[in-house]
Length: 471
Image (tube, rainbow, N blue to C red; front, side):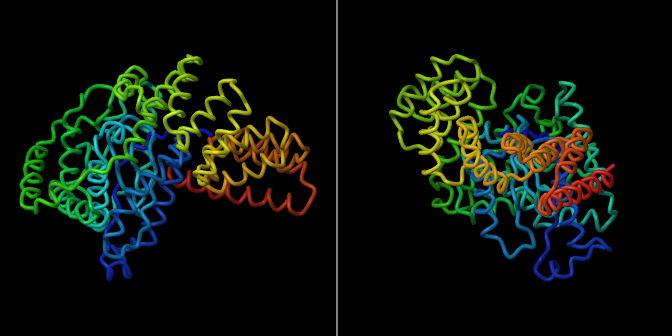
């Protein structure tokens, strides 16, 4: 499955409404419904312009941290869905409507889950404290078009090989002074104060927020981490850190000394480094685990596979499985390695079957299992699994592509063409999408097939409307 590697670079933050305000939700004539609509449309724009990481091991983990924080808050009108942006920027932001985005580089460079939770608490505090709502109320300068402009600018910078940071990035923890909605010092102080409270209430070590600031400060601002340069020269950052430390020192010792539970955090961090990180740096990280740490051995196997060192990869995976034969993640990655690198297909199938028994919700592993079934001639079994995967990621173009080809192989032409149209639609290749749609129309015979074509046309029209409004 294509891991959607988005560089979504805006840092729009949603509004906080108290329970009474949530019902009225009127800022001029900008209502809560307007905000939610803007948030949903913005998410469509981000996902249609650039891909995000959809691996459930990564996504479910980050969503779990967000949920843990949100669970302690007073009733909110938002659900706070999380997405993980694949880019090495150390950033996170919350968009209108409470949509939360975390950059993979942030997870990869932090040291503890409490630090990640600290950043997320800070961003969620921007939502709950009405920082965007106030700006909308005063001037309504934010529009979907302006948001898309920031995204498009960053995307252009990336495609040109430039730094994605700088003034093009806006946001709270990393904000550009020239960005259209940089937060004020009062906003940041507010988010620091409430974020620290949220962090503690969620059961985390309060040192996490200050620790995240320290990590951000320590990075090479002009280097590959692509952290926006504004943060490095923020005149209040040291003051904010000092205030945080002072606030933490007033807390009881049992809060300040809370034990860090980093087991899941370190697994997700290792997975991101193994699949997406600089290979030389990642190799150094995993070498520190020696030959007794199964996850580090898995990481070394994934790195070796990336470099086509097949024998080394196989040896690392076998060593990892000897240490942890029932680890769903290691089984999944070993199965994917065996399948994609031309190894033992039966072994790949066994690994993936066991991984899915241990973690039934792992649709990333399920996608590769479906491909194995397809290659072995079990089209019906493969198609059932493709449909299951699409329940989780309905806009993943790669899944639609494989499903469409599988349908075509058994002469279900209209359905197959239609899924190829979806695949093209979701990567913004309108010419190919229209071509596949015409083929699907021509091949449609049954009422069900004709209705499926109409459903596609409706979704495509809604998507086109959002894109047009954002221009």
